[in-house]
Structures are given as C-alpha cells and as structure tokens.
Image (cartoon, rainbow, N blue to C red; front, side, top):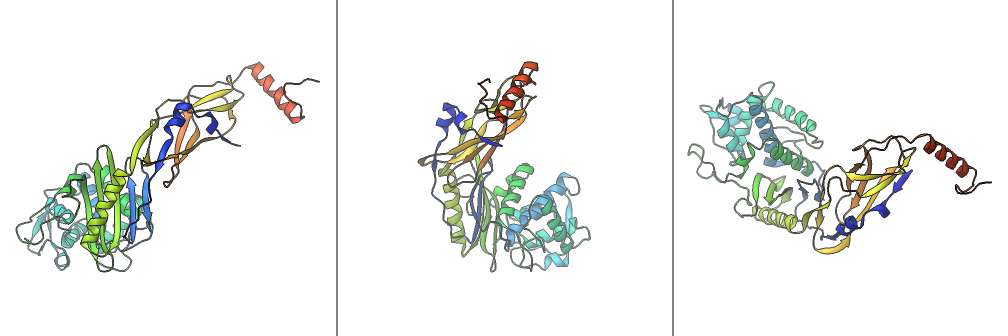
Length: 389
C-alpha cells in the first residue's frame, strides 16, 4: 500500500517548509513559457504546447545544428561557404549576401544571431543538408528536434520565413534555448553581442534586436522573431546571481510590447521567486517500515541537497508528504531509492524528490522471522499481537 509519512518529517524540516505564494503573472502575449533553469520549475505556461508560427525564433534550431557540426568537425568556424541563388533571393532581414560571396562560418553564425540573416541561415542549411537543399535541411531539423524532445516542432525552412506547416511551441523553444545554453557554453556568449557590422554592406542592419541586452538585468540571449502571422516574439534568457531564467513569448503587436513584456517577465521571475534548500544531502526527513529486517525501520534521506524554487512574498504552508510502498522488504542497501518527497507549492507544479536508504538493513535472523510470522498469524485470526490464548 501507499504510505503517507508527513507525520515523520523532522521539526527542522517542517520549519523550512514555510513558504509563500506569488501572484499569477498575466501577460499580453498570445503564448508564453517561463522556466527557472537551475531547478527546472515552470513559472508560467500559456498556450505553451500549441504549435505556432515561430518566425525567426526558429533560427535557433539552425544555430544548434551548426554548433553541433562545428564541434564534430563537419564545419570549421574559419571555413568559407558559397552563397547560392536560393540563399541570395531571401528578403526580409538579411546580410545582403550575393552569389559572388564566400563567407566564413563564424560570420554567418553572427549574421544569424545578431542580424537575423535569412540568407545566412540558407547558406548554413545548404552546407549541412543531406541533399544540398534547404528543404532537405529542414527535414533534418525536424528529426533532430524530435531527438531533443521537441515534439511540437516541424520545420519547412531554416529561418522561419512564413511557410505552411512551419511551427514550434513555446515549450519547445524554451527546451531548445536550454540546450543551446547547456550544450554549447563556448558559443553561447555570441548571443549577447549587441552589434555586428558585416563587411560594411548593411549599415542599417547591424544591431541586435534583443531589447533586453541594454537593460543591465542579466539578459544575455537569445533570439527575436517577427512576421505578420506570428506577431512579435522573443526567446530570452537572463542570469542574476546563481539563477538563470529562460522564457519565450509570442503574438505581441509591436516591438515596444515585446520589450515591455520581456522586461516584466524577467523582473517578475527574479523578484517573486527564490531558491531554498529544504534539506541537505544525507539529512533524515522520514523513516519507512521494514519487513523481515534486522531493524524495524530505515531512515529516508535525499541523495543530494533538496533545492527548490519557491514564491517569496506572502506566508503559506507548503504541502509536503513522503510516500512509499511499504513495508519495504529487507535486505535494503544504503542509497537504495525507497520513497519520494512530494511537495506542492501553491501556484507552482508538484515537486518530487527521490529519497534513499540512510543505511543498510540486512535480513533479520531466525527470531525476527519467527516473531513476524507469529504477528501475521495473530492479525489474520483477529487476535491482537500482544495477546495469547
């Protein structure tokens, strides 16, 4: 059966469970997703799994695959790539490339990040495509996205140019941003570059469109997006102290609205929530009953420090309980996973933390087995275990 062991929580642990509830954040964005990277806590999800036109935010997938290719030696940052007529024909935001160019991969990547170059994406795509076409690369993007866990993303091109079926969800974009930050720390600093003047040929397109980079609030990436169909959007990230927040917004009606909502989300996420260490590695938080063991109970401890993200402002008790299938059959080995600590902060998703055995509990000897057998027989006959006939 499932045993609920909240009553066994230590007094120290219970005191640490006094937390607070933050007011829900209301956003003008059509869709939004906000997560705390360190704890994985989802702070906001609005239409987060709906596949929507991602506009230039989908260029992050092209960048991810370009970074992979560089790391694996299939591309070099100093390598120069030719520009096809197809790439040159792209309109909108471009690097103004033409078919006489051979452009360094490093310049193309900066052209995508800072200048949002549609043409630069196509050049990278054709270089990495299995069949040399952007369409072939888009199919590869879709397959790679699935392997990364992005289940609501389908690509028709490399840059987000409006096309039937080219869709991404806000959750998928946040997952992709997290992969870029975690998987490619050597490349991620490029996302905070405010300006890139490629070859002096586009003086009107040298500034990074990310509105947060100049605000001194820890913002250091990632990518804006805009089409008539998608509205204005942003995949953003900011770091303050030891915390990093990743967020995605879409469907806003202006660059000003995008800037305002982005700043509001970052300030809200850092001001309304904070990390709390509720238990240390190896600190007993409960006990579990043991069946046929040399001891009747075993201590339950976290394998690592239990650090969670909690709202800060108004006091409220955090609901917490320890659950396990018990009694637990001996033998038990130290660090064996036996239970879960389940916490439900108000306004946030449920948190589940594995708990492990504090120590070994060998099987009991002959007398333990005899006492257990007698106790079971007495209980099955309806006789209290302390009586004799």
